[in-house]
Image (cartoon, rainbow, N blue to C red):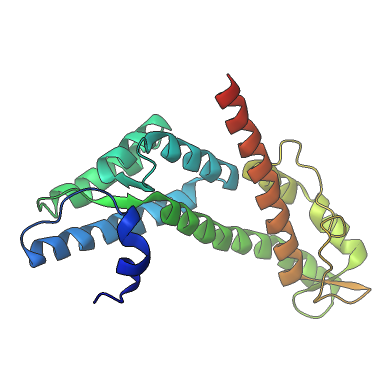
Length: 224
C-alpha cells in the first residue's frame, strides 16, 4: 500500500479534509465524488465552448484560496452558479448530495475535471466537423476522409465552420491556415487534405488561441 501512486505522488498535496472513521463510508464518499465528476464533465463538455472551459479553469483557481488543486463539491457548485450554469450546479446537489446522503464532503480535482471536459468537448467538436467535412468529401468524389486542397479552402470558409470557430473562441472567425501552424499535414498528399490531420491542426490552433486569450484576460484582471 505504501507504494501506491496516491501515497507516492498525491498524499502531500491532497486536501486537508479528514477521513471518516468507517472504510465503507469513505468508499461511498469516493463513489459519490466520481459520479459528480463524470456528470459535471459530460454536462460541461456539451455546454461550454473551448474558450469558456478556460474561463471556468480561471474561476476555479480563484475559488481555490489554499491552492490545493481541489474544490469541494459545494465550492464547485458556487463557481458554476456564478458563471450562470445553474442547472448543472442544481443537478449536482439534487442528484448526488441528496440521493447519496453520506457524511463527508466531496473533494474535486478541478484540473483533472477540466481536462476531462476539454477532451470530451474535442470529441463532440470532431463529430461536428466530420459532419460538415463529409458533405464536401462526398461531393469531391475523393477517397473517404480526404479533400482536394482547393475544396479544403471552401470547407474552411463555409459559414457553418466559421460559426463554429467563433463559438469556440475565435473572435473574428478567421480561416485557420493549415500551413501557418508549423505542423505539416502528415496524412495528406500534395493534392489532398486528410480529415484527421486537418482536424488535429484546427484543434491545436483553437487550443493555442484560447489559451493566449485566457492568459491575457487573466493577466489583465490581475493588473486591474
